[in-house]
Structures are given as C-alpha cells and as structure tokens.
Image (cartoon, rainbow, N blue to C red; front, side, top):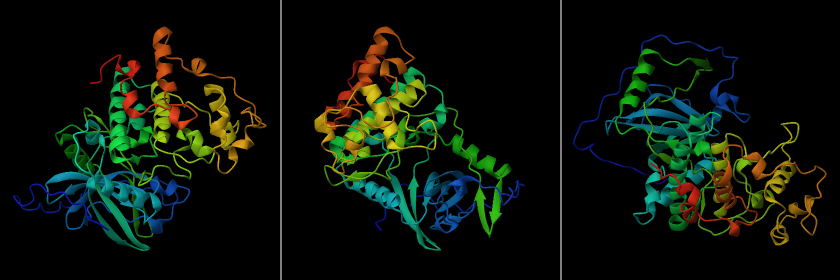
Length: 408
C-alpha cells in the first residue's frame, strides 16, 4: 500500500508526548444493549479494530475521542504528536471494496497534475494512511482533515435557509466540475451525508472537544475485552465552507460502468434499469439532493405502503409521475431487460402497481410564481431520464435560479 504523508513543521519542533488518560468517571452501558456500529445488520466484531481512547497509532496519532462510525469504519479525533495538530483517523473494517476504492481514489487524485480549478480545494483528500494489525488480517486507516457535521446532520429534517442552501450547492457543483472535467472521476455517492462543513481556522472547537472528553468521558460498554464508545460530536461556534467527502464508491479509469451504486433514494434510473452509466449519475443525485435539502422531503417515494417493501417498481413509478414517461430509445439500453418489467414497447407503464397522482409542481410547496417556475426549471435540468440530456456541473453553476442570490 502506498503511503501518503504530509509533513510541515515536524523537523522544527520535537514531537509532543502522549497525553495521560482521563481519570474522570464515566458511565457503563449494559452489555446487552446494542450501540453505535453494533446496530449495523452486518456487524461482526472481528471486522472492526478495537480502538481505545488514548491509543497511539504509528507512534504519532493519539486517539482523543470517537466522532462516529460508518458502514465499514469507525472515525476518531486524534492528536498528531509530530505536527502538533488535530486530525481525523478513519479506521476501516478490513479490506472491503469501498475501502479499497476510497484509498485508490485518494491516490489517484493526489497524483493528478496540479490545477487552479476552484473546485479542487473543496474535495476532502487523505493526508496519510497506514495499516493496523487485526484479527482477520489488517485494518486500513485514513488520516483526514477534521470537519464539522454533515449537511444532513445540520439540517435534521429542516429546510435549509435559501442563502445557505445556494452556498452549499455552489461549492458542491464546483467540486463536481473538477472531478468530472479534470479528474475524470465519478463520485457515485452524492448525498447530504457526504457533504461536510469545515471548521473555523482556529482549533478552539477541537481543544474544547478534547477538554470535554478529559473531564466528562463519554459512556461506553465493555464486551469480551472490547470497548465500544458512544460518539461525541465537535461543536464549533460557526461553520466554514462545505467539502465533498467519502470516495468509497468512486470510479475512474473508464467512460462507462455497470453495476449497482448510489443510496436508494438518490439512485439514477439507468442504474435501477441495469444500463451502463457515467458521470451523469452524479448530476441526477445532485438534483434529488437539492429537492431534499430545499424542501425538507424526499423527491421520490421508493417503497410501497409497507415501508419494508422497497421493490424498484415504486421508485420508477414515482419517477414517471414526476418526470413523465421515459423515451423508448432510453428503455432499449436496458442490457438485462429489467426495463420491460415496467414498460411496454411504446414506453407505457404496465407494472401491476399504479402511478402516483403527483407532479413536481404539486410537490414543490416552498416557492410561488416565477421563483417556483425558475426553481423547477433548474431541477429539471438534472432529473432527466436520458443521462445525455442532463446538464453538466459547469452548466448548472450558471443557472439563473442559483445565481439569483450570490453565494457567500
């Protein structure tokens, strides 16, 4: 595995000694209660490295506290003892495909020729990587710049204020334009959870986090000599600009791909219908994400009356209601023939479930008049059946609705 290492002032100052562990009392959680990563359906303790607060990795990164967890990783705030700074360390659960893809994407982006493209600076890349010996081989670790919460966490079901929404979108589109036009890379997992807000330039919020963990340690549970901690979030007084993060599904090196990608609510029709796909899947996801962020609700209903019934026919049916029927030439691209389960040769809906009585005009309930019409024209540039009919990120940045109030 190639090493990514960024050194700045370590030769000028001696490394900091590790901090002693906290002696404050903490609450123990019942061992029978599932918490954090244990709640994942596929959780296997052998796949998750048993990180402990106070651990020092690579004689350099001391663990301060747990920031969160993902499908295949836990995330920790650490002190970089060599650089006298804070970093985030993502400890991945063995060498799964998303982990391999994320590392490959970071190495690929690092090796690209430097460019002054504005969007490059809003992509969160890796500072370093290393391996930890684990029960089933080794756990790969990524060292990243600390960030605040995601746009999804910040929103928590609310509608984002219009100015903040446009500001976030402006930077995301710039980042995507860099990835698509210059890096020739598809993110393939655009969603609110993968857009993180940056922290203020000072370290006050990180120092406060460390002090809270020292004086009021988080509750935890002990199972078979393993400690599972509750997560603690960084609480900055203000937020910086958004960054596009998490490249565990990224693709590069070709022009078209096949296979299942994207979280279900954001999944493009060509992916659902078993067609080849390209970078325009990201544009579709942006369009869906815009709707979710601005209106505070999902664009498409992806389940039946029973929320557990997530057959794709419900998702496709709602697409037809909102967008109209797909073009026949588009349906013919379905290499697996999945499209003909839902449509006839003329593109008419034939699936046993009916079409919802809905439209974009009915569903959009935040704006009126010309502002509403302008917003819907903007969204329709992204959520189109045929990928080639969708606008590029560069084109979207110049849309009148997005530019109607300048981003800050």
